[in-house]
Length: 446
Image 1 (cartoon, helix red, strand yellow):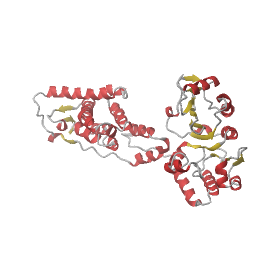
Image 2 (spheres, helix red, strand yellow; image 1 turned 60 degrees about the vertical axis):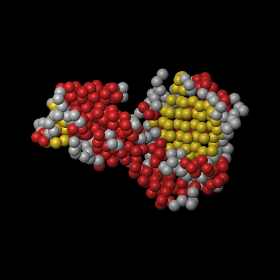
Image 3 (cartoon, rainbow, N blue to C red; image 1 turned 90 degrees about the horizontal axis):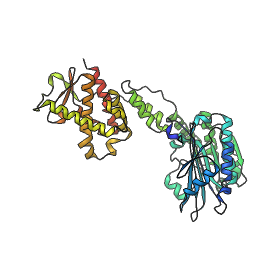
Image 4 (cartoon, helix red, strand yellow; image 1 turned 90 degrees about the vertical axis):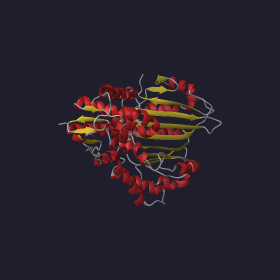
């Protein structure tokens, strides 16, 4: 049974819920968690989990849940994951903190894509599920909102500074989300009358003294001007010390950061840059597209006119060429499990290698001495072999690798010099990409 994770889908926004409350550890677990599962099963509209996972993965049943919680238990907490096998993707966790720690129930949901919740009726059912939980369990706080927008706030958990969070707890309203449940303690801090008079789409006092507050009927339009105005009004009503224009400006800036940007990448590097964009977090995606739209690769500098090529200075050029082929095989050995196309030594395999090194942040994630001693010679030799195989190039062997050239048309190229430039930093992997040198050499082939 293969579960579908939110990480298996393309980078896009998701609906994120965080729910924190107390629970009674003296009550049988099946009875204490009954309302959690009952509301989940009743109100999850098209995104119901069908996998329960503790130390083992099982089909979702109540029995599977109790087994998962029991087998995952230690002296501190017990937890399980709930997932789906089909779209939309769901990553949901349920965690119980156990005595002697303060007993706590933590529920988190990440449902992807956010666009799945565009219908008002589906959003209403989600709200009713959270309401059912909040009526049953003494909530300290709960929020549901766009995951991308939360990540653009100052700190992913309610826009807070991490040190403040651990020092003060949830002591004031640092961020207002689409759906909010404020516990009784926070309601009293703000003032119950003020809380209940909030200008929001839905404000409801809960039986345990908490307050449920929803800014808009749907979550998917959170970045619209109307939604940002509503969010700012609510926040400033609950926090009279805040300046409305400042709050609204900050929210508008976040909306602008998330606004779709049309890719206009350099045509020779579009396949590589598209993969780079797909590899960043979805809340950074549009900003990355804009950055790469404006970026232009510097013209390769690792070449000379053919008539000024360095002559070969080795006794056996064929033996030297065999050595270059052997070095290129080192790159195949290094990458073949992650980059299967590396066996083919094609221009496309250069792009695959470029992306692999970028994804791995290779220049900074591997020991420098290993890069210099092993990766650089292998990369340079592999690049040279692709020039030889696909552009009719010819090795001009030299005793020093960095002086070794490949003759293509009216230019000679220095693949080992390119490899050194390439491995300076993560940005250098784009500025000095193997793909880009190949495409420029291709244009100058004849």
